[in-house]
Length: 164
Image (cartoon, rainbow, N blue to C red; front, top):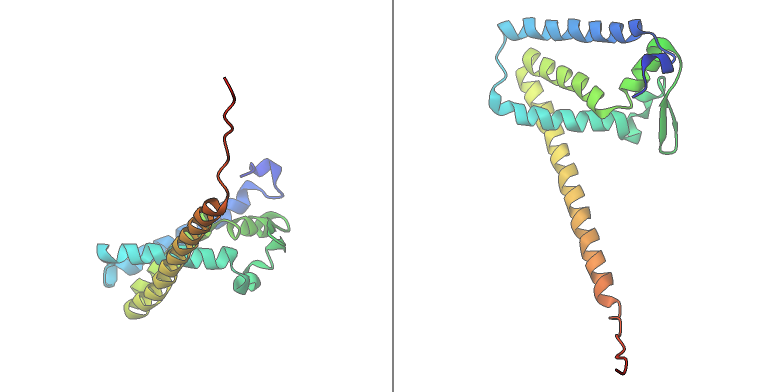
């Protein structure tokens, strides 16, 4: 991550994003006081849902429309575009960890505001995250099997015995 001095932003641009996040977080805390609490057992589902949602927003083609005003995408290269706050939002939308913090806030807010809807959305996204993990594991196993198959098909090197 480049320092503020090396980007077309000002510290106040990041302060605006931090302030917005803080206000939203405070609002969620107020809602939490009067609503049904989030149980500890729900945290892994919410974590998996946050992973899936942030990956979806930052990486998937279907969500290009969200990134397009803030991110220049050319092939696999993604760079924030514009200046000031627009650029800072572009940085946010190219970072799964950054977007994950906002995704978690939104998912927990939904869970507190509308518990059944929040649980349903979190479950769908967590199942998607599970699918991602299983697909990655399957690809890893297949790649390992292909490597072993190629190695088994290669002829063994012959060693010559030199006369002593």
